[in-house]
Length: 218
Image (tube, rainbow, N blue to C red):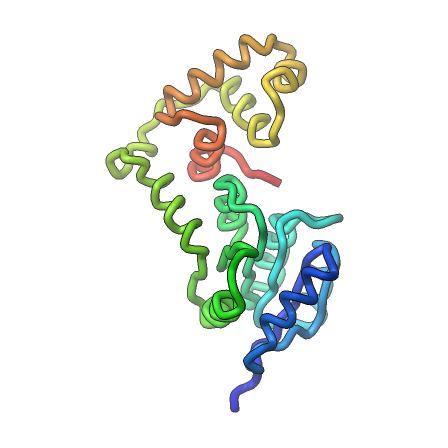
């Protein structure tokens, strides 16, 4: 019998970790060697134990799942990262994949899906939740001809500033205060962004910004 896949599991809720551990260890070919309650602890445990797979949530204390993923991939390239989260927002998906995650699964997944995702990323294969895969395809094509996003008009520096602040979740008023302009002016910049990027919402604009590499969500 081959050696079980060794996993470091990180989530800031102990009850959630317990349930995930039980799911993972049902069939005996996966073993959770350590649990972390925050992102920094997850990075430290990966460095110490060198597991095959690290399972991370997105929203964690000290270091977010995004930053923890980035550090694990940079410092321990042999360790595969599977994100297991309740968040299926497009900006999070693109930010995690940009950080180097091998898989992105929602917490609505059943035990077989979760174990299958761990096995897949351990083999070096991507593992994406079906709903995430579908929306990624929609975002990348969006009914536009292939490559259309690549010829989007160049954004002004001010429009990029607005886009980056919008990616942080700031309201128009907060963006205006940060940049010293009125919220009406912010709205005008957003309208220009939507037109240039051929999108219809903040989420779509942020997603396109992530895809193009103009912004990174921390």
